[in-house]
Structures are given as C-alpha cells and as structure tokens.
Length: 424
View (tube, one colour):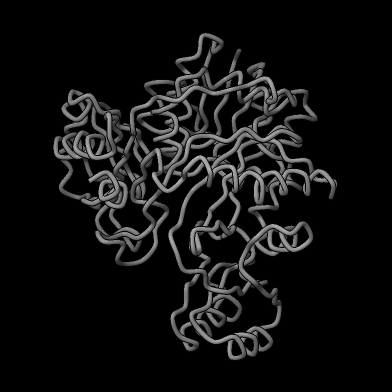
C-alpha cells in the first residue's frame, strides 16, 4: 500500500515509525513531517490543514490510505474530501469530528444518551455565563467550545478567575472564533486517565491504557501543556474499569453517534476522570493523543496497518490486537519557556547517543539544517523507552534524555511517578 500520514509532530512520527514496519507498506509519505519523520517517510511541505493541497497530493501520488494525525484537518472535512476522491482515510468525517470540534456537541450527545459526564451549561452571551458561574460557585471549569490548540480550558479555583476566563474568551477573543460559545461545567476531582479505542462505525476495539502529564512542572505544578510525558500501561485501568468504561462511555457513544446520523470511524480518545473510582467523561478527542500515541506504538505488537484499514471499512470485529508485556514511557523535551514564549532554531546534539541507549527518539518539533537538527516548536522531542516495569522504562528513558545535548531545552524529571509509586 502507498500510505500518507498527515501531520508533523511526535504523534505522527510514532505513527510513521509503526506504519513503516508493516509489510503492507510499499511507500510511506508524510505531510509536512519533520526531521525525525524524514528517517521513516518521504516528507512533503504541505500544511496539515491544507485540505485542498493534501487531497491533490494523495490523488497525484495514487495513495491507497491516508492516516490523519491532528484534529484540525478532520474538523475541516479532509476525510469527506478524500472519500469523495475514492481514497480510504483513517479518521472521522467532519460531522463526527464535532465530538472534538465542539465541546457543546459532545456534552449534548452525553446528555441524550446517558453517558456519565460533568453537569454543564452552554453560553453565547457573556453576562448569562457570568450569572451561571455566580450561581454555581467555584471551583468550576470554563471551556471554549471550539478548537483552541489545547489552550481553551480554564480550571477556575475562584469565581473571579472563572469570570476572567469568560472575559478573555468572549470579550478579548483570546481563542478567536473558538471562544464565541462557552461550555461551563462542574469541576470533577480525582485522577485523570486516557482511554483509546478504534471504532469502525459499529464496533469499538479498546487499545492499551495510557496516562499523560499535562502540567509543565514536576509534581504536576505550573500551567497545563499539550503533554510533558506519558506511560503505558496505566495501573489504574484495571480490567474491571476497562469493562465499565466500554459499557458506560465508549459503546454508548458509538451507538449514539450512529443513531444520531454521525457514524464514527477512527480512533476515539476519551479523557476520563476517576471520581470516587467511577469513570466520567471529561472530553473526547477524535485522534490519537500526543504523547500517548508514542507509548502505545512502542507497546503494539500487531501490524497497525490492517487495524487502521479495518476501522475505515467496518471490519474491526475480526481484530484482536497484541500488546507487549513491557511498559513504555516517554519524556517530552521542550524548549525553554514553553508553554509561554520560547526561542526557535536552537541546535540539538546528542541524538545518536540517546538512541545508542536503546531508546527511540520521536521528533515533535524539529527541522534539518544540513546535518544539524534544530528545534522549531515548543514540544520538540519525545524520548521513549521500554522496560519490564514502569520504573525500569522510566530509568531507561531518562538515561537517554541525559544523553541529549540541548542546553535550550528542559523536561519534567518525574514522568510516571504515580505508576512507579504503585509498583513500589
């Protein structure tokens, strides 16, 4: 098969790495890709949200399968366009991608189909939103309805903080059109968990559990980020909990989407909160998590390509994926200053030394400058390793991190701390 992966981050590098290992993969392309992806696929400088350009490229190159990494092109309807051109595409169509494209859409779906989630209200008027916040009190969560590059959520500890979040979104337009409508919801305490399933419109196939670290600093301190590291398996995801999540959240969503006229195909990523040991849905994403995808691909022992195709053509019921018994852990190396302002273009050295430890370094925000690798993003590298336990995977990952020579970057030093504590 001739396969195109859309995107240029760490998630897409992990997908390219796994797809390139498939005997079914005859040729692999990535758009736009990055310096690391270029080791596994031929990269072309087409932006991930350039739907016209991507469809034209896939048509010209006689692509058999397009795997869409990020959410923006899915919401823009790239799968619809590719299917109209006769090309198989992994991911939901635009109407189903609204599960991530509109938080209000997702919450209303939960309400219609009895899926456990936080209580909420939807608002297009700032004063009405403020009145709701004053009535509900704090802590409370304020979310921009649309896509805001992971920056549209405020977990407000005080009423004043929540009111400020409303002003920033609706009056200051901090998130552009994404903040024209707000979802304001109950704060749920507990432990967050990432749950993934492949879906083919009717059948859902659960993937291995994973857990990420959103806060920028050790001990889960500081502002939230796109993710500073992840590990798999997640000790809190017991077989009993997985069955409960499938029965109360994932399958009702798949059936509800089909019943509502939006059959879902692709990967369904549920952000969960374990509230008193019971799972509630925080949000849905319509693509693999980043950096959770990296640890999932490291543990996957089945050929990923047939599973991706089965999700597209409705034959997932025939699949049973195999996973390594080893744990996997990834540490994000980010540019100094992230998630705020950061410098681009700094040189990264020591990547061969990191790989020599046995780890795999997935590139998230890099570009090649001749023989030199330079940082181009906030999250730049995902240093990923396996081990018989999460503690050993952690030790292996940090040994590789310490081999990277990049004075302009930093990382958390405690990725996996919850799981390691469980193992102790």
